[in-house]
Amino acid sequence: MSETPPADPTGGLPGAGGDNALEFRDPEKAEAIAARLEELSGALDDPPATIMHVCGSHEQSIAKFGLRSMLPDDVRLIMGPGCPVCITNMPEVDEAVALAQAGHTVVTYGDMLKVPGSTKSLDDARAAGADVRVVYSAADAAEIAEEEDGAVVFFATGFETTAAPTAAVVKDDPPPNFWVLSSHKYVPPAMEIVADMPDTDIQGYLAAGNAAIITGSGIFEAIADDHDLPIVVGGFEPLDILAGITKLVEMIGEDASGVENAYPRCVTESGNEVAKSQMWDVFETETGEWRGIADIPDANLVLGADYDHVDAREQFDIDTAHLRDESAHRLADDCICGDIMSGKADPTDCDMFGEECTPEDPVGACMVSSEGTCKIWHEYGGRPDL
Amino acid sequence: MCLGVPGEVTTVDGPQATVDFWGVEKEVRLDTVDAPVEPGDYILNHVGFAIRRIPDDEIDETMSLYESFMEDDPDDMLTDDVIDEIEAGRTVPADEAEGLAVADTGPEAADAGDAEDLLEELDIDV
Image (cartoon, rainbow over all chains, first blue to last red; front, top):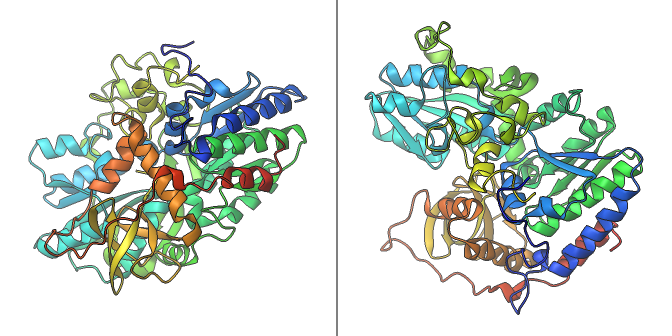
């Protein structure tokens, strides 16, 4: 069901045709891959093949280039918990809001400002006079602490690609008034939990090529073995994604498990050893709830004991009780972000999508970030390109 | 912002580099990169940190791909995210910058063999 015109599977690839045709958008190759995909999906014993990707940039590229329109009916491509802003849980936002309300300077990435806490966002706290600032980089957060006399708390969010920078700053002798409130998350354990959800029925994962630059593709071997799944690490150009999906459908058809790297020009098996060693020196994993999805073992990254001196949770007595209002029914109670991120529902299944919940006035976190499924679908006018 | 952006290293000072992103000079930390970086190298920057040195034979293609992202549609979300990442962060003032012009890497520089290589690598018979 489309609110947008169907994409032309060949000419719809920007950059296609003419002297400037880009190899990873070549429409003839795209058609050839699509034909192979059609053939492979037609031979599936138990269609449809349900493939989950776990990256907001993948969803953006899929929507932008109309890739779902090129997939056979027997291939379902859904987005999982791939937006770090979206899975940051309300109590974590409450901690940041409480610290800002207590008079400390709270700095964070721009995407986090409007993410709803139990009753307030950081943007609400800022409007009420708290010192909340946006930074581009963890290094900028430490620099603000150099300039300020009071406490500066970096509300640190994101997956491996931002956790490694946070670790580098923590290890680089930050000023004594600099603390980290870590809400960093680690994706592989979440992939395991979602793979086991009966309603989701994932048969293969398209893993995020950018995070795998750091972790390496080898990290997925154990998941593929334990859950008897194929996992393909994919890049972000149209042909990268199509080739990744085609490989997955082939492996699903053969009932094969294992890991393939469809982004070899950026991803190695072992990843970035320097960034990994910094990350695992500074962070430990802990069980924690990903917003609306589940308690996920070992998927929250918290500062290890050696770094208590920069850990905001060790330094401050963070009281968030006043931010919770158990009595009122909130729109957020009806938010289905969790179901969307675990592949059980589409944004358009939500009654509030585009009505009470819009990018300007988001109810759920998936409508806040440019990597959130709801915001991407809203931007592209409903289900992209079906 | 998830994708990261590539740029050319113009100066290196310990763990800190100045990097040229299509004419925008920014400081980028090198603590998280797993290869030695020198002026003239290209790196993939993510939130002010280099997470990868781009091998020489991949520079042209990488720059072309990003240029095509940026040329597609200025209102597009993916384009927006890439441009935001280039423009965000600490810009080195022009009078401090010793910038070299970014290499001339038009889309025609893309290596026509690469998509073929990928299909071969994955053993996808088209």
